[in-house]
Length: 188
Image: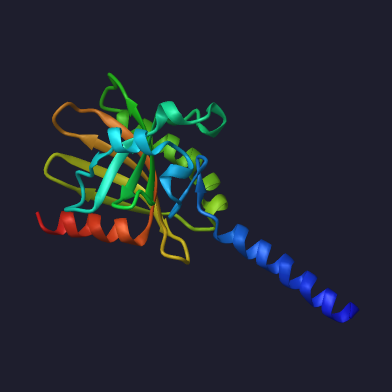
């Protein structure tokens, strides 16, 4: 009987440890959770809008004003979720715009990104790698990585050509939203 109880104890402990290791909690939200666990259905229905970087099936909703202060970061001012047709969370996106910044904006953004990189790597047990990309109206320098379960985590510094603005974006994406976003950009 003691042997069985001991085995059960080890099983429960290993289950809890493994569950914690795959938890995708980010600023108080969890990937794949129903957004209605955090915000009301009426708020979702009245405020979500089609995601601009996917062809169909995904919607953005700004949740900055709905978040408890203890879940916010001093590095970011805007908080957004990307939901599917069933209001499941597929992306948690936070951003910070650097206003009226001179030509050193990208360097400032990259410096801040480097300062939070280790925290992100430790929280999600990943190594973030650098990447540079250019698009028609903007360019980005990012630090990105994939979790063992396919969850994509990235810190981006984006420079927008039209107004010269720079924004930092930190996000966690499911494989589904990552695929839909790649499909959108590969179709241009």
